Image (cartoon, rainbow, N blue to C red):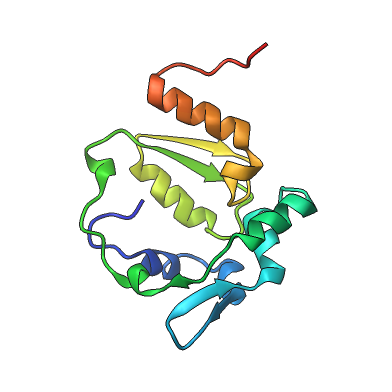
Length: 141
């Protein structure tokens, strides 16, 4: 949840370090990948070995240039927003997560790794349903 004028990499650099920096592999073309041996535990530590490996194979190199570009807008100034603090996240330091959470209309805390959409799939679906419809999703039964 960057604010206007902030950069993604600047926000990460301003927060206490996590295991992410040591796991990044850069190349001369300006892209970065994550060491495959570290990626699973960084992003999906709460998943089983097979699922973790599947998600790791889906990672692709990313260009770093956009991370240096300041944001020009921040929708959370005009729209309701919800921030999920992930207590077991090894990528984004809790200090930065709490900073973002103060910008949101509502913050919730889940005991999740960084890949919350995978490790807490049912909760993610329920939250998105609630945000879209204003009602709780009830399990089919």
